[in-house]
Image 1 (cartoon, rainbow, N blue to C red):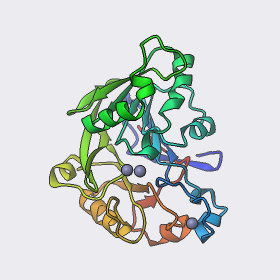
Image 2 (image 1 turned 120 degrees about the horizontal axis):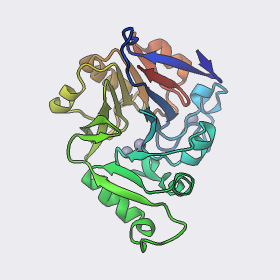
Image 3 (image 1 turned 90 degrees about the vertical axis):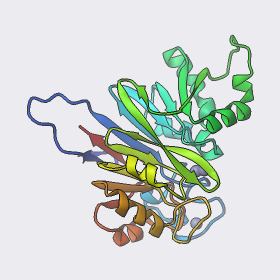
Amino acid sequence: MKRGPYFLVPLGASPLKGELLEEMKLTFLGTGTSVGVPVIGCQCEVCRSHDPRDQRLRASVLLELNGRNILIDASTDFRQQALRYGINHIHAIILTHAHADHIFGLDEMRIYNYLQGGVIPCYGNRTTINSLREMFKYIFAAPPDSKGIPRITTHIVEGRFELFGQEVIPVEVHHGELKILGYRVGSLAYIADCSHLEEDSLRLLQGLDLFILGTLRYKPHPTHFSLSQALEVVARVRPRRAYLTHLSHDFGYNKVSRELPPGVHLAYDGLELVSD
Ligand SMILES: [Zn+2]
Ligand SMILES: [Zn+2]
Ligand SMILES: [Zn+2]
């Protein structure tokens, strides 16, 4: 089934007849690394490519779960993403960490406060929430009746938690020196920035239908997986399918797609995956 230039990919087995299961839809709002692709000032083949799958906004996904919109990371490009994909509600935000490319869209939540009323809960580990409160002082240090600023409540993730009737499992990952979070929701897991996964975290990723993993480039990098490292992790996790995201201009969609093992794909902006 096609929608616009993008494909709707079924995720998981069809429900048994008569079995009522909730649908979970994931949309890649952005699949680019922190500077996006094309990179400002770069004339490389990928940055000049006209293939929309080579044009990457900053990394973020929207999870539609039981009729609620959960935003995983609020990217620098969030406004553009919200307009492009018609996101008219945000019911909760889950943050992987507080690097600029993952949180600088937070100011755009103002419009959702206006559209839907109420505050928007925002989840992250203690370091992330502390950084957020520091970096967005104008939001969090403002008097409660302030106008013109996003109304967001912060929630520190210290273990599994429930969101709209679904358990969310935080998965701790190393991002260089930082310990940040990926998240598992049902049989789907999203890990954006990562350079190492410990055994305990790998255990939480067993039995996945869909595994999304950040992969920066061919060469090793101190804070992100290279392609060969990411493929090693995928081989250990053994999901039914894996999608690589947070991609740099090293990766031309067509070229890299031909190099990937079966079941592993490059994600691209606008790709939708559906789980029954
Ligand atoms: Zn990042
Ligand atoms: Zn380039
Ligand atoms: Zn980062």
